[in-house]
Length: 343
Ligand code: SF4
View 1: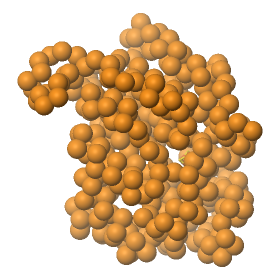
View 2: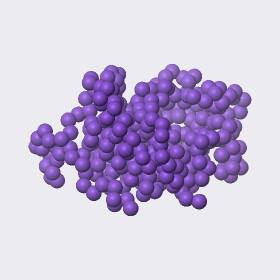
View 3: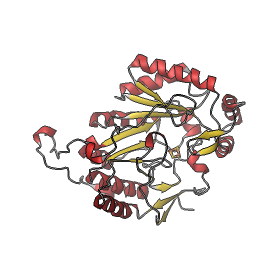
View 4: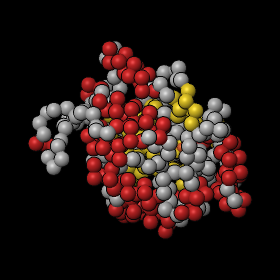
């Protein structure tokens, strides 16, 4: 069976979710399914998600260009677009990365801001692209723990946590304002104070200023997945935090279970206290904690979502060794090597 099956995308690409901080921000998923296959991933449980490998929308760049052209004509160009609500844009496959690269480049060249959430590895072509458009890119990294046991059990196909840390440093140096999404916190496993301190201290040292946190939210399919993929002792210890909790509506699903409120309150208190001591801004994810006061973790200040009122910053082309302000008002041009080096 092939890891990547190319398919033709017929439906509209730029759709806006109708919830939380992504409300009205168009999102793009480059694939259906995700090669990272994290044990807790809810997107794996969707009926349309392939059980093996991913479906890659090979016509995505052409379709994106076409949609943007139409939106521009109607004066409805989006200010920002976000990647990766149900798949990672930096999956370890050259064909996936090629499509991701093309889509990012199209958006950035059109002056559209781009944010993404990843647990993957960014290759040099992407860093090069982002260095040209740093004002228009917001990088968010998913990271829950530096424990290599956790990594092996829960997200073994993602980039190693220490590589992600290096990537945060690089993103910070480029001015991409990296933030960290600590989701899902696994009750009893990644919420011990010493673990939380290590995580927050390391990300702060890497130049991160902001984190958002949420405990694991269960759905029936996620419970089955965890039961199948984790050692029985680990699985049972996680379930203790959900004992007695009813099925409830979280985001778009009516069959979800939140961790017990007392458990989350205690855990979030630990996160908040340590984050504040370290000078990190922290949000408790409002979408996944509907019983807590809503906190927005959007990387953009979109208090006014009208494009004409949003300023992505002026982009300049700089030469090696030249400062941006010396470069004049020449718009950024296409980065050098492009996708070919993925192959
Ligand atoms: S990286 Fe994200 S989308 Fe991909 S499998 Fe893991 S949780 Fe799911």
